Each structure stands twice: as C-alpha cells, then as structure tokens.
Length: 199
Image (cartoon, rainbow, N blue to C red; front, side):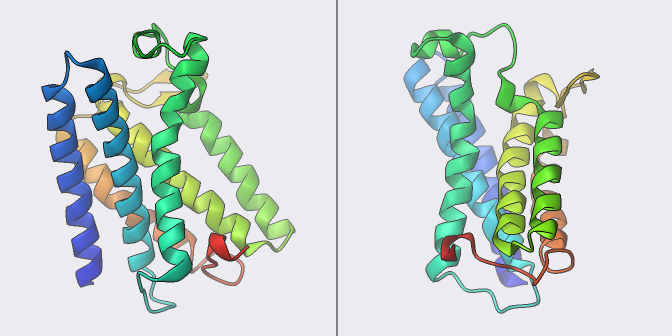
C-alpha cells in the first residue's frame, strides 16, 4: 500500500510541476514541447508502476522485466504526440504545435476500439502478454488524453468532444486510472499478470 501511495503522489507531483514548466516555457516552443513530452512520459511511468503496485496476486518489485515494462509505458505515453508532425505533414515544431484540429492518435474512441480488439484477441489466442500490452497501452494513452483534456476535452469521434476537464478533475482521474487498470490484470487477464518484456 505504501508503494501505491508513493506512485500516486508521484503522478500528482509530476502533473503539477510539469504543467507549471509548460506554462513557464509558453513562449519557448522547444522547451515547452520538451517539458510537455517529458511530463506525459513520467506520468506514464508512474501510472504503470502504480497499476502494478495495486496487484495482490504477486509481490511487487521494481526489478527486471517490470522495470522495462514501466519504461515502455512512459515511452508510449510520450511518443503519442508524434502524430502532431504527421497531421502537420511537416517536421517543423511550429507547424506541429499550431494545428487547427487534433491529430489521429488523440482520438479516444479510436483507442477504445483498438484496445478492445486487442483484449479480445488475447483471450482467443490465449496470449497473456497481449492482454498486458493492451492494458499498458491503455494506461499510457488514457493518461495522455486525460492530461490533454484540460484544454480540449476528450475526443469521442464521431460524437464530438467532452467539455474541458477541470484541473482538479484531471488530477483526480490520473490518480484513479492505475487503480481501474489494475482490475483488468489479475481478475480478467488469462493467467494473470505477464511481463511484456519476457516475450
């Protein structure tokens, strides 16, 4: 339980400090993008660590393959923003950060479909690693989308977008996400938690 609290506090502190840095660098595109991407990545790291720390089926430890899985979640949470360059059809940071529409990987309903298909496939194929991977990607993506939703809401195509999430609501959702995700792993994954890095 102490690790759960530690990782949850780390999520909150990372979000608060990261958001302040993004505001501080608002006129410096490169530093702002670096702060924003790093914040997404660190939140992803702490979110997956918190998810794993909630598991009761196995003793949690920060060694070996779980560390690789935690790092992978952070990378996924961070690289989602590369779709800005795809949507801008340019490698220019200015073009990528001044889009008039949201890029495809920021569509939450698209991810809900993809992740649902991955979870179903993992059951059919009896592939525990695929269930774990889908759960991890879900944590990475949804932590990213929740953070972005303070500005534009959650994009649920084809319905539209929700209103922007209030700041307190965003912090609350980030802290709840790992707990919710942890229920997907021990109860529903075929065979329980399986490290992705062992595959």
